[in-house]
Length: 378
Image (cartoon, rainbow, N blue to C red; front, side):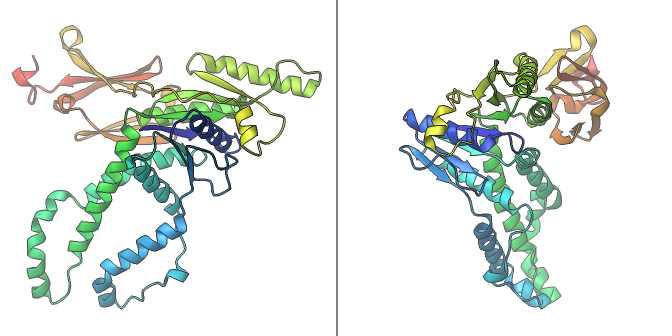
């Protein structure tokens, strides 16, 4: 399945462009699902080949919490805890994000659709959402390592000896189930058919948003296939105020042309209200996904005695870059973003020999550790 994630700052027309994109694909005969985090009605309306779904975080949260109470009933009774009724359960912060990720996973596994268009929350919430599966999986594996489950067979015996129920069994089962669900979401995001379309109005604020988003997406390995310059004004206008805005937009468009593939969507002069207005926006068709963002390791042992790890970080600033080697992991911090990634196997037997930021990419030099490298590093 082709998955297109629509991201952009709030107020930039992201949801409208997502609806217009889904409607155009459906009109071309593509079985399309529009998955929206926005609870407001979409202007797409009913259309052939188009399904619109808005996950309900309140209902999902109630269902999950009720199931948790059932599984942990013995422990709750032991602690004297009163169970919550469905009527008094309200979603906690983060419930909407988890609900959207679950809907994304379910939609991607379905065979009913050829295209999944996802209207993400506004930036920066969307970037935090896309980082959530990997980060939660890392936390779970650190707090409840799978290898510790080898002692599960002893827990009933320990429970009888202690005289109290042991909660570890359902705890590990819950962690394992979450890990499977999160892995399925991460697989969708890492799939070659998944890419991001950034939507913003051309101008100083939109330029900053696109630059920040592109950096955060690159750190997550998500490719950007298009930047949609939305609400573009005509080049010629008799109104001097509009002429100033149009000139500002043209300046930003010129800056975007080199690093991105830019598609412009003209301003309708009004807020789109229905399918006819969405069709008039003339958003670009959904093309095959671009090549995934790769982090290659090049062998420069013969020339310089090092291996070089290339990490694309477009728009990164040297003063905002932070690198920490921690065991077999590398902590990469850039601007407001941070990611912990496992080192490729060859680099685990090396020491960091330096790093540099050049041409929109980070190049980290690794020298073989003589005590770990075959042949003593020679």
